[in-house]
Amino acid sequence: MSKVIYLILALTSGFLFGIQASINGALGKRIGIYETALLSSLLTSTVLILITLIFGKGNILGALGVPKWQVIGGFLGAFILMTMTIAVPHIGVASTVFFVIVGQMIISIIIDNFGFFNVPVIPFNIYRFFGILFMIIAVLLIIKGNFNN
Image (cartoon, rainbow, N blue to C red; front, side, top):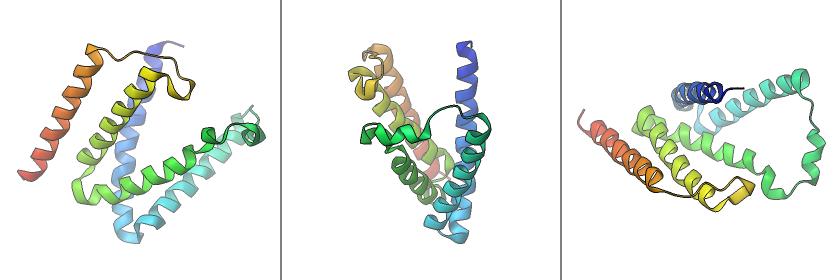
């Protein structure tokens, strides 16, 4: 499959992430933060169960034999979902999502540079430095825009 397809999938996921943050932020105001996180996770799990039953070919029980650090993604996902639900009503969707993305980029570059979690090593370089620098400048401008309205 062409790498362009993966870029399009990632971009689509980013669009959906912003929509999800907006929806969960609004729902969190109505039914509560934890309730929203739980409901969203339950619906996500239901969809993934159906997808796995239809398309899955792996061995879900194999998760019992992997190193424990490889299965903490669900805990991290719960924290991310709750913090997004908490932050959106207070700082807006753009600020929340952009901060999440900047955080993702910083930790991703660190993980790439050192090859943590068995990913291929991609060394830190001047391009990545300026990419992060420009993202930090952009997020500061977005925050400044929040206070000028």
